[in-house]
Image (cartoon, rainbow, N blue to C red; front, side, top):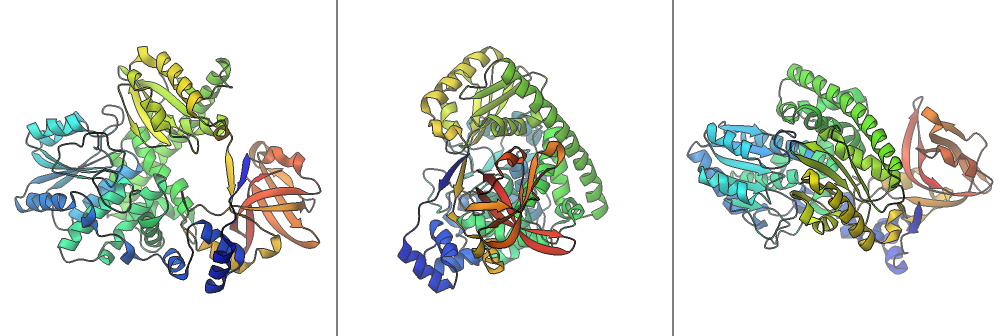
Length: 561
């Protein structure tokens, strides 16, 4: 691990902010590092307000999208709500359906089959719409590059409204409306919405036309926060406001489908990481193992018994997904070792038997092990399909663009993408991808980095300090849970390795002559036990730990040396 300490912010600004907010200089310093420099900015940050959301009509084509939906309703047209099979796609479809069904019934949903149709808008989906007399398709979390498919639909008398957040190509599909804040010609101020976020802006615009306010739409935000958390979009601006209120909905009055997913957690408060690690993987498991329709059915279900039945199936898919993930990761690691590729700049592996639904998770696991851009292939019909993951700071989408000649299609983001190619191009792609990354990556990026917000003395960690840190959530990219560093730390002698294979580290640490200790847990840091001596340095986050009814501040160790 590389430890990088964030630069110290301007001391005058820090001092003034600490005084204005009546907080410690360390809290003020962490806030200034996040661009919060005065009382108003701090108020907006700590008390996110729905009134600070942008007018949806600023988004390019929003007026056209609303007009086309209103026209469809007036003419009693059948509307098909189409979305991808991942969390962002299925929550988007559920959101749009849940809203429209409150006043219009000629609607249905469509999630493509991951194995038969693959990612995004499909010809099969358009044919389904045509066969069932749908004349308008609202596509969510996909469609920005579906030029030919939108044209194909038009020839059949089917219009498209596209709500997407992926990077557009040079050409925009010829749809009735294309909502995407990343369009070059779109002046919408916040560019980082997820697909479900763009869908939410559309229902916001529709609701405004009906004389409703943003407060009428709060019940839909449990879906939006789930998508924001799962899609790993920046936790800034509108995303943070929507996530803040979405978490409140999940904790107070979630829809039945989400309630049945979290009821077994038995937790007082669901956090953003519970959404990432508990809710999202289960929603995703449906599309990975069986079909994304299960996820949509659960999220739009109003009957508790039916929801419990669907959730039980989804839980089984999730168990299967975990077993596959473990098995394939093991096989992929062996493949890398056998091919003597442990020193490469990239990981590219392939096996035709690997389950297409879990190769994305496997790619993430391999990135954790070797920490370099990773592509995991499996067979998909006549072609090979792959999931791509990157390391922090490296734009893997640009690297793929440089390998375009060998691919059939590709799409995605800076850190995660997908592609297909013909089997005969696999070796050429593998070679070219290694060359491109080797030439363009800063070698430093191949070592994982811990970005430390500030150094702390243990005496500064008080209940008030922790309360303020906690209020800085919800955390996510560009607003991460602060990481602190403390030097000359000692263990009280009861430190030990815990867990399966002694993989984790459990310590009780203190500093200097102050003998009050903090419990500390370091997941996957068991092999650092030998470094526990008279004085060591730690990087950590703060969290609460409840044991036998007592709650205390615990250190979540990131690294030590």
